[in-house]
Image (tube, rainbow, N blue to C red):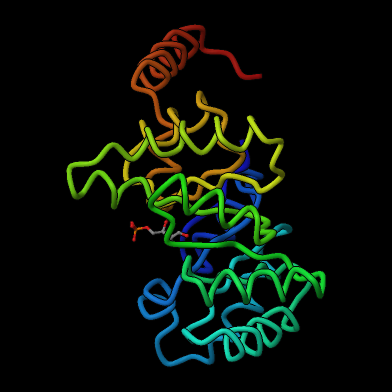
Length: 218
Ligand code: E4P
């Protein structure tokens, strides 16, 4: 499963990319507001693209198809790594189709149902982003949505990649792997929670203590 970092924090992106832990980055307008204050958005996107060798999702902010297409083209011209993110509305799907016809990769975001995911695939989406955490927030079962989309895409050999989004804790990521989500995007905190294991820490402390008793160097 490809792992994307869900942030516009360039420091965190460099930290994860330099360790080889991530395959790309996703941003959204809220993350840009949080981490890109006082800067030109294009400069932030360019810096992110320089920090990670993989797809970087940058979201349009128009709601009307033609303006979305213009914004999408502008975003795509920033760097080859840019994937244009459009919302899962009728205009968004029309913009998706038009951008794909120009060879621009598109991530269709704000997906909350399997029917929406099917329609995004028909519009040629490169990635579909179902938001599991936000489904859980309203007492739904976010991961069930991922299973349903996986089954539907497999039933009909649809090539759109499932990008599990709105991941809030490690179990979301682990379940996404087991279901066969193509990608998952997560905040840095969840990435490092996936890495940590208390038995690793305890085991390492024991090994180091025993080695120190040897009184030797390597
Ligand atoms: C996905 O691309 C979004 O940026 C993100 O995963 C949304 O997560 P949130 O629901 O925690 O805001």
